[in-house]
Image (tube, rainbow, N blue to C red; front, side):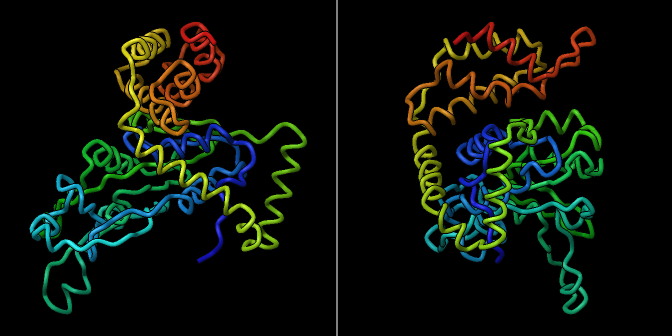
Length: 340
């Protein structure tokens, strides 16, 4: 397996790194969309997160990596097996690539043709959604994704299940995936329906200051020259980050969100004119995850300020009388509603 650039060694891009860690702590936040310049480290950060994530318990032999401790999300085969017979082992959290040219059959799964022809049996061959269950589905150039796949992902993201009814098959299996998308806005916009499904959206820009650019080039060159040695240099930092994510997951349920903080989150969304209530929900969940990462027992204004741009910038209506970017509009609203 090729070496992966260490997560802790990524220079700058703090908002993107924080958003990915939030998604790792609380998948209910709804995934991460990273839009920005080519060659600014978007794909590198996603692949680095995959190597950073702690392992998870899964049922031995299950096609969908079912959690033996969560009976509500077990697939049909695991549910039919007595709980005492469900053996488990530790597996890596899946981070599955969805290629742009992927067919619908490859994504959702289809009839196992080899088995059907050889034995005359109808058997389901799981697709990418099955492999990504309880993990991350990574879509590079997400804004170029075909419309029928966008519709499919919308259904799965809303239900947490993949339903396949074709070729005489009727299969329903868990597909609780965290969507992670990257793209370049110059190559096309994302459909509003899918854009709204991403919990957090971060802008990734090429560093403008000279020292940061130099450090990026030096680290990348060091990694390509000696990937094993470079990884060893950052192994301790990555281990700290992994432990931080694990500790935050354990603390998440104990972090409180006061009515006062909820009121401020709602006030911020009202002032920005966001549609629906998904903005408040995402803002609350992301702020709670940040509080858990920092070891705090309750959400306060500082947590809301840190996550507000990522949680809300992609939910704003276009204002023809205001040509400033969505990030600037969020920052102005934060300054008014959540003054430091």
